Image (cartoon, rainbow, N blue to C red; front, side, top):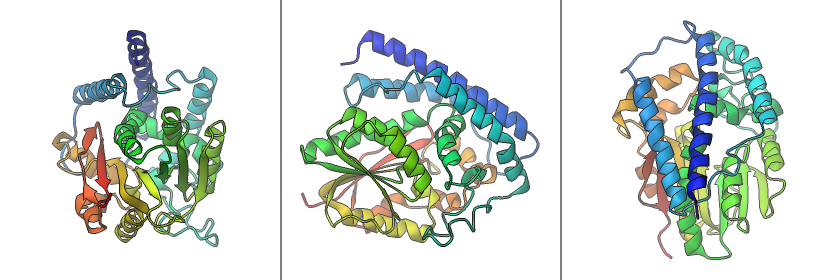
Length: 343
């Protein structure tokens, strides 16, 4: 059970975290000032409104911890040496990202690994990041870059998946099997294993470099399997998985691939199994952010984001055979739950 001391430590750590990543955001914005593509659309929220919404995010995060849905994050106080090393790497790479954005270059990795089975839609410099998702350096920088983008809120948004995941695992029992699809560097899987150490988990991703980083992060946890595979062709048996999470995957997929992935998820879930999806808000999810969502593809290379904004997410998964459950908003993300009928 969380204590008053835990609450004080959590609040202090999150304040420090927000200041740390906001400082890096200011540095990135200063470098890019006047160089980003002109953005159209409605104005987004001001700094005061964003800060208030961040306060609400961390309040909801703590409320879930206090209610016992999940534990406080294990790495609230990351080693300073690692934090400073990540900061130096981020700042060193920043001019290359800014130059790529300024020049509109996002296909540098198009020819990389062309013969290894990686699909063309994947071989791009998403977010204008160096090496796309195809190198060790990219994998080491990714989590830091995402936290800068969201002002230190990315982990708290991801943790919104833990409560509905816990419900699914309780229903499944001691032999539950869980998959994190597009697991990336394993950051969310680490939180899962912190909360359910005996749970058998599988992380699936398309990047060998990111899976290697996940293996490093998860090396002290037991019951972890990491697999390189396409989300649209999962190497899993029909009805074999009790819970599946997909964190920030679907907005990165072309529309046709989204449909194929939804069908695959429905196939591998057992009757009564659950999908928990965390992804970007869509228009209307929180109207003050609609302008930001419209401008996002112009600020970052997100080639399939516009189609994500138009996607009928519930319709996609209902058509695949799942049933929509309750969801929630966490800052700039939505948590959506879909269950497979039949248990």
